[in-house]
Length: 102
Length: 399
Image (cartoon, rainbow over all chains, first blue to last red):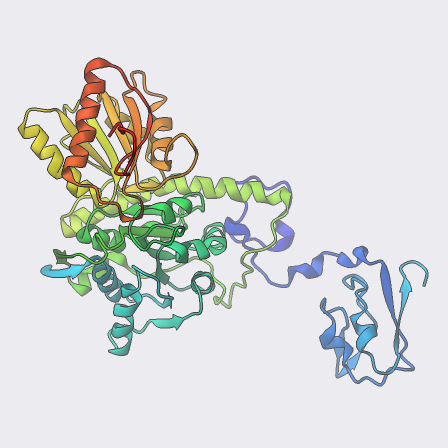
């Protein structure tokens, strides 16, 4: 009785839910848009960015996508606005704004 | 062919482990269970097993290692006692809720404090609500036999719960007895291989284990766990029946010793049963109708069966080797009395907390209990329900 995350919902009776809450796939946190928790919002300035990529490994929520050795804009669906990227950026390429005031 | 050899309880369990050759042993020493990983380490060094022997820095880590290994899809075992079991507490619940059939050899020892290394059941009784199956052994043979049955019970598909095989520290673990040891191949054939349906390292079927369970899901998983514990009753009896067919020794939820027409009975767990059997024999020879119920399976609790076994008795003492500090009796008493509530005619039941921290319990102590029960049976006067036995006192104690 394995189920993927999308097959597990709040209507499943106890007889049919997976034992121990097992889910037949990984990385399912991706499906939950936890970015809604954010109060402060990082903004990326691509012109100032040197692509040193220091920010990406510091991000606790994997919300800085890196492709072909280049970072892209934030994944705002999952960024919580903790500001660590802003703290570690040596080039002032990230600044913080109040959520909704961008 | 089985053969007779003299082994300590710890050695018997380590010997069973060698025969089973589990995939992972997470080892951390604590008195009196230390000898189990010690003997097993020798088997590893001698190449008699190909088990991954993981020496960890704490019991929290040994249980965590078992959880990781079992979730990955292999058989994981460990052994511990007392504070070591207490230190595993958080992870015991994780193992049970993740439905991982880990096997733990528990060598029962008092919990600190005051610090004490001797036998009582406070360690495993404290873990009784963790969702583990608990099976207790009277002697070395039972420690060996129960261990051989453990994995098949725990791994039964509609059970999938971790299991604790308990024996009394020092009294059983360090005493050397002649026991029947089964042939390696026969043991391997009986125990079989662990074949979980899904596991982390099954790459064609990815799996996430131990997710965050919000309130819309948690209750359903707990009901499933409760159902699995009920299912374990059938699995325990099925495995015991196959064990009897294969090796000729019979086990159930509990052993009834000379209970046929007993008017007074004692219910207890573990090595004291041997002492109690001697006492029953002596008292039967003197014409007293007394019997013993030795509880083997404590989780799941065989409530209906135990109540039926006590239904014809006039007075019974449930003897707890742990003080649950409920203020009204120990854990075995609480469950036994609850089980008897549904009987049309209930025996008078008293609770005796005894043997804490290795306090001795001799045949004459149990004879005092039987005499006290026979007096209750005769007069119908119960007196105090919740008693302690074996302590020095300024007062004249009941027992």
